[in-house]
Length: 220
Image (cartoon, rainbow, N blue to C red; front, side, top):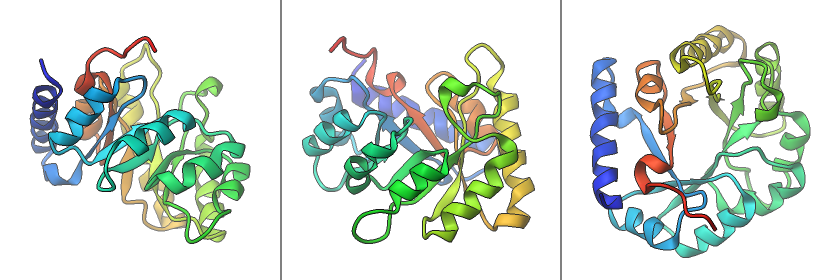
């Protein structure tokens, strides 16, 4: 199956999941995560009309951003070291892994307004994945906004060997619970290749899909 065919199938599945949840499919953004993918597949996705792309490593982001035209919109979806913020910031329209004050302070540095962020929440207590504890999510949202960073919403990664649906529902409930304190958080970034339909049914507005669109990663 070609990248264009996979992308068409993904769009159909996203739309069907949204309809099942009584939602408008247009509410869901597909971010094509091009981690470790060869250039020809990335170019094929762009040629098939894909706009939003994602990377989780700063060096690959720079390389792949140079590959595509200016119409592509890049998202950084991985854990980010504060000293790499200056490399990533000029390239992206959103950071999906804001998880600490020190990163917020690095993200604000540079010309103009910083790109919007999602606050990553570690719902399951998996420290290796990064993310703020649920009890600290509201405080980090408030801090980011206090220094001039737009917070679009929350992001999470469910545990690998558990039913992802309950974690997606938990993030949506956390968002609803803190909005009266912090203000609107319109977006939820949750759902990857193995579970994006469940994420959409739970309220996700951004899904991050790699192999479902591109096929198996290259061994570069």
